[in-house]
Length: 279
Ligand SMILES: NC(=O)CCC(=O)C(=O)O
Image (cartoon, rainbow, N blue to C red; front, side):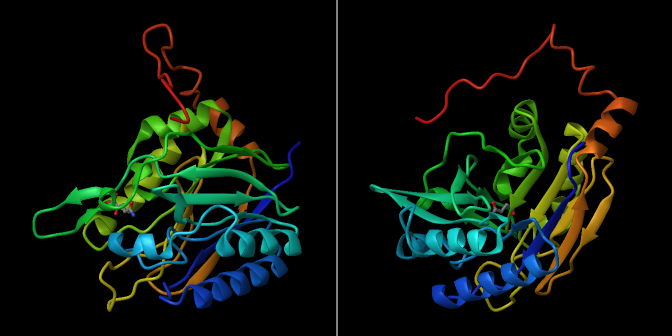
């Protein structure tokens, strides 16, 4: 019998001053820990404005200040932290990276955004992450005392293949730190999170920055937690705030027993294969 997990989702506004962003993230983490959260999630690029040309200035290597601050917050509170994402520098490359820390402060895993957000919507959102970022190649699933958690970033949610690969590695909760925008957010954000929950029969979570109309990229907000049935268990609007949700991994088995699509996959006819990792 697995223990239930209390999940905290932080929807915070971007602060251009990295030190302020870190301070705000830590005070929210500390607070949600006092409320009983075992796992806390931050938004995509929580320590940096979401602007491609500024990623190089804000980038840090693994082990840098932002990484250390998150590791210490995890250890001090004895909780897991999915540290949203931050620009990570390695050599000449910059990745959009989510570091995942365990209750002892150790880094359990790292997801480098696999699908870069390069879109150009007529009369709508334009964004080219590939101007400054390099995509990652690894599927990220971490083991916790509650069960396995898959982590991917924002635009990655549009790729059911990645959700399937995480699910095949045993993940029962898929967490997407994200920053959808005012063009695609109202159209697709809820639809995608609920679709991934229903097609993989897992919990899904989207954690976004709060909406700021004076920034060059306006986040849709609307952080949410979705059950394996596709129900929205909790949802924020556009402002700063937090969600606390109870995740019972037993519910995944309960749904899959009644509606056994995962076992009904025709693996004799088709398969999804991971061709390479860690290029
Ligand atoms: N930060 C992102 O990857 C945004 C993804 C997004 O808005 C979308 O429509 O997809």
